[in-house]
Image 1 (cartoon, rainbow, N blue to C red):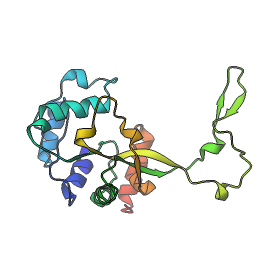
Image 2: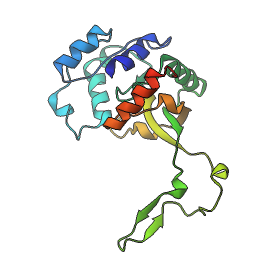
Image 3: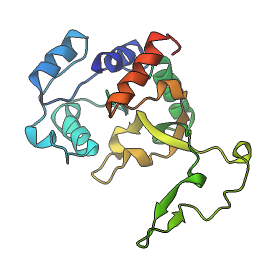
Image 4: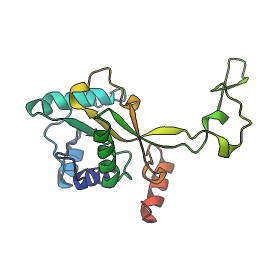
Length: 199
């Protein structure tokens, strides 16, 4: 999966340096063979299930980017391998056109949250939103979800309190480029899009 992310970053017209953060020596070698730089190995303490993305990013800034002056950072997670260099470049253009406000990529949701429910303590269904759900599906307001494919932030703005998912600007991506691979069925969906060459 990391190949697709590295390749998209390298093919971008605007990204100057592609850095991979990993604690794994094999992933580091694979990443370098694909053309990325791996100037440091991440400490094991920053490779746990409880490790936050911002802690990983701030570590990278401290050990590498503090040596050089950089304007902005594009965060590309390898679990979203279908994003393209064109997606990245369009997001960067959008970011700079909007005064370098923090950006996160989004895509349309399939299941509208107006139809979602949760259980209360008595197993009674409760709406997530206080809105009538009798509206026709085609009349429902379009809702978007953070897809995790592209995050762009000014380097100087990053702190421990930064939540990338709460970035201000939303850059809309096609759903076929927005597959987030967390489970085996996600692999099948990604393979479907890749084999059909529709991205």
